[in-house]
Length: 614
Image 1 (cartoon, rainbow, N blue to C red):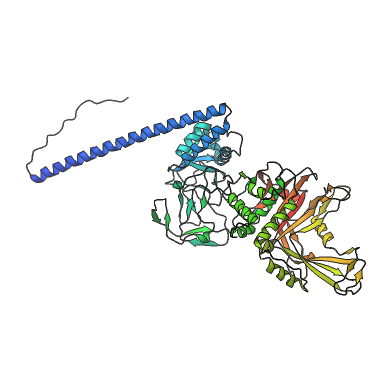
Image 2 (cartoon, rainbow, N blue to C red):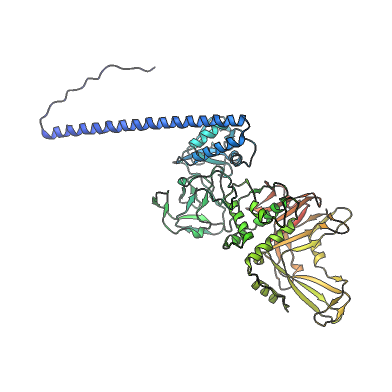
């Protein structure tokens, strides 16, 4: 019960004093009272104005929710998405604390839906997934302490949650429902982001600014995720430990979280400004920062993304996923200066940048690469991934090499032959993928061996086409390829110039590549066009020492990625397995899953196998 007291309080009559000092003091009190009253009125007006603005904003939100629901009921999904995306972008751009949790998988699906990558309208939000069992019954959760027991243990951004501001949360929850509402007190809690630990750390005094600006359109490729305007820049802060904390609680990577796109203003820690000040916003305000430690993990792994396949693009998708697993290759490609005549190199650079800015777990298109390959690889037909792989690498190689007539020369030693080839081909493809083999031809007349040295990008291993499907070991294919053989063909010895009815040939590796590509020749043309269905087993660690020249002392490789072909010759499908971030993934076009069952070692449809030198 409220009691209203109408009794007036009696005021004590103040004595009159003619002292000038007292008169002056009383006059000052009166002026102070007037000022306080003025300030109070101004404050009340401000509160009233803010209240009216909030009410207007809420009414706008409810009207928009109703409008979207009407569009959906009429089946006008495209129109509803356009309105919703524009409004959510405007909410995210507001300078408000980012303190409301959204379960990560839901946020990921929602972002894909607004980008029209997902056709199904998201269901209600289920934030219970990031709460411990005893707290799932609550409607509202407020996180006020570090390692709050209300949240699941070891909770991480980009894996369990995304954060948005209050207005964005209210709109999304009003439209989709669900919950519970989870907020965080950023004054008392810092959620920390741990980088991948490596042996070296770099200490920088930094101007290390996260740019939340709109991502550039790369050759008209659509960006994934919602875009934040420049005004919403957030900065790194120092928490005096060996990890980085960010005020937005977003993952500190060359990737993006659902509902927000972020990226470094520099692609390399070494490029950061060595300064003690950093921009807080576009008003050029600065603040002193302490020295912080940032774990450097170079070369940087790319986010895990899928590639869309409208019809026959699986051959290209699988090949690119395998190449993208080689971080060293990606780093070197990005450092190459762009030029107009470097069409394929630039396209691959842009693909890497597009993936860097993509949401982990999302899917993108590879239209730019597909368009420049149209003349050779029609998108109306099924294509061969091995043919595309060699074509793509060769195109980059040609773009980076001076176009001169490379005369054929003969050399006495493998080292001289390789040095000559490297000098003529100082490109990243030669550096990483190329090797050299020696064809040793034995002359029956002069009893001497003639050597011919050839650069190679891969090893093409023939498969025995057994009548009954059986397992073949990769080592058996290598033995067959490198064994000494008799070739029934007339041959003139380069040394004695005498003619032989046949020759005895043996192949040896004289220069091993950093990245070894093994192509298993599954498609036979004789006696008829067919696919050899025999299952291939291959090791995780491959030693090819016995197939190398004696000058090569160590020749061990570790499995990095592979392309598998399922189906028949004219009706099949390619997918890839690749190791990223120390884990194996299965890439089946736009469907990407963790390879928990070691299928990368048991898949019997292996077609192209990629190894990396240990």
